[in-house]
Image (cartoon, rainbow, N blue to C red; front, side, top):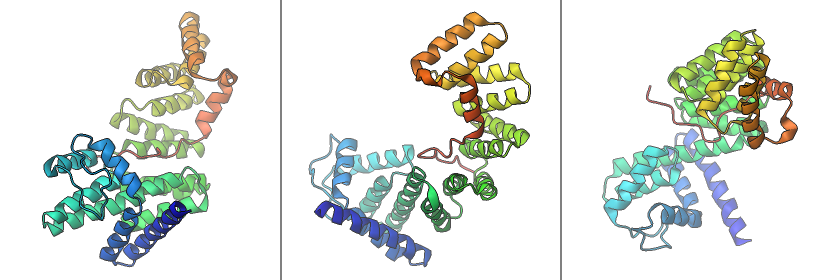
Length: 313
């Protein structure tokens, strides 16, 4: 019961932090966020223990008690974490703590701002798993917190797509692309949305843009293949499925559809080999080619659970 009370209090403080931020009270917002993090000490301790096993000397350290680590090693580890995973709120938070301890108030404040944004951006992405009006609202608020955050716009687009607000969904993806033209996931989601509207030429263009930026984007190759087949380009379709399984050898649907197409052009030996790979990766009840292809052409994958960082604009 006590743990549930703590979690409820943390959620309340996180919500309050957004309200304060949008009201222009950013210092108060970060203070509320920091208080919420202090209620999540178990999660913080576990993360620190996993990240810094060799320099961790106090397993009960929390943001409210000095983190007794080898200072430089800890700071380097936090920096490396945010370099690899920019939405790691606790890593940014601990960078802020380190700067604050060193008396570098400006740098500490900047890190706390990044921590605040990272937490709420990740929270917005998680709401997509449940969908509904709540997801749209949470994702929209993230775009209000930082209108220049491309990942916030792509999450809002995915939420709007789930809510069947297709025009607004496409507009959100275009805003993400305008902010970060090199963001492959934004182009990919735009392609999914356009395919759902049966605007096939625009969908193909969007998938190709995603692939120019990320040549190993297996789902983009797969969905491109679906559309090429729909438009009567079997050889392009085969090539796209081949590219999909080259990019992801465990892509069962890709192997299956490749097998269908190879058999259709008389390459039965290669087709059977592709089917063998597919059977090992997919449940046998999904062996009907038309079902898989129809699903791929009409059902969006949405934004990744944790969208990749937009490349520098």
